[in-house]
Amino acid sequence: MLLDGVTPPRGDAGCVHSVPWFTARLGGALVELSGSRRDLTLREILAESIRRTADAHRPTCDLSHVRTPQATVVVVRWDEAGIEYLVLSDSVLLLESPDGEVRAVLDDRLDRLPRELLVSEAVADARARNKEGGFFTAAADPAVAERAVTGRAPRAGVRALAAMTDGASRWTEMFGEGDWSACLGVLDKEGPQGLIDRVRALEAADTEREHVRGKTHDDATAVYARL
Image 1 (tube, rainbow, N blue to C red):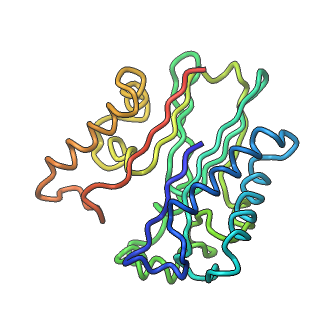
Image 2 (cartoon, one colour; image 1 turned 90 degrees about the vertical axis):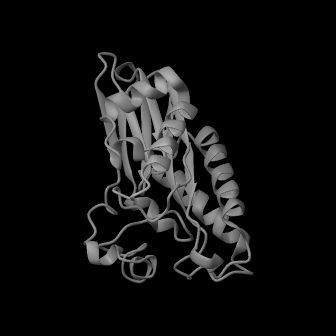
Image 3 (cartoon, rainbow, N blue to C red; image 1 turned 180 degrees about the vertical axis):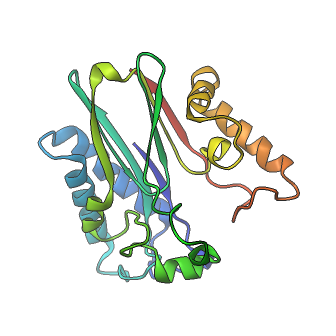
């Protein structure tokens, strides 16, 4: 499981709780339900986890605020027969087959937005965040789980997998240092910290901002597992 909390500008979220508070509770519910409720799909588990987290601060906070605490989500669970996965928003899941082919599972709604909606966070929030035709994150509405990209794969068809926040996937998506297969290769040889160190070096070297980005450095997390 991987979550990437969405930091509100100037701390304006209509909520007395922090993003770490939100992600800790959402993540805890996801871990518990993914293991204990094998009868539920990952979409159903995400919906219930969002509901539980929202109920925990509904009495004190404005959950209708567009910047109420929220996060991107990647969840993967497996047994001897198969692998089930879910991706919501701009984090990335990579699946490697036994023959070395790497497939990226992406929720690319944010990438498909018209550029005029991305000129500022305020414009994107007002017109696209958790709205039809825009992009979706796990916030306070359980119905957003239906927007997640989900799928299944035979257990024997996956040799390794990786999940990355958009800050870590910059190595491929922003700086173009290699394709997804090469990215997974870095994770296999150098581990998550190796990939993140490479991204940080690229960010630091890009002093002329040839690669347009809202933040010089973005939160970067990666998880890698060989099955």
